Image (tube, rainbow, N blue to C red; front, side):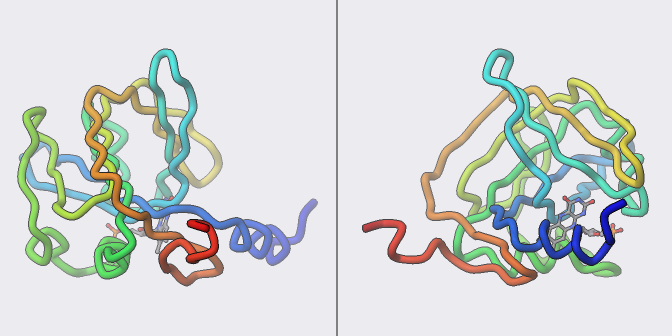
Length: 161
Ligand SMILES: Cc1cc2nc3c(=O)[nH]c(=O)nc-3n(C[C@H](O)[C@H](O)[C@H](O)COP(=O)(O)O)c2cc1C
């Protein structure tokens, strides 16, 4: 049985990008959270996955909704990353956003946008894995925000040499 701190440390030392995933409640209110468990799954069909903690207040919304949007954050969106991970604040009153043609909330300033319809959900321990089929993609080609050991920042300059 792996020790919890060793597991946490190994995962924390695995760098990722950062996304914000959004959807609507059945009443049409926008919801969203910061997510770094996002990954690509399949090319044909185009599938992505992410995992949501069962304790997140909007867990049931995301599991029951048919559509959601994944925003891959740009290098200058550290504030958006923090905002969408902070409990007890009205997240959407503090960003510029608008509904997409599929009526999913889209936040301005992203690097890439993947609008998805739910393909499958899988219960996995204290999380639910949500697999989405990409129905719309927009690439702003902006440099991404990276996340490593609980801090975030831009891609180091040497990567561009
Ligand atoms: C960089 C980063 C990555 C995160 N990734 C995930 C994730 O993949 N899945 C998840 O459920 N929560 C993740 N979180 C935590 C959620 O954003 C946070 O628990 C959520 O916004 C709480 O929402 P609530 O206040 O509606 O319960 C992450 C937080 C940060 C800062």
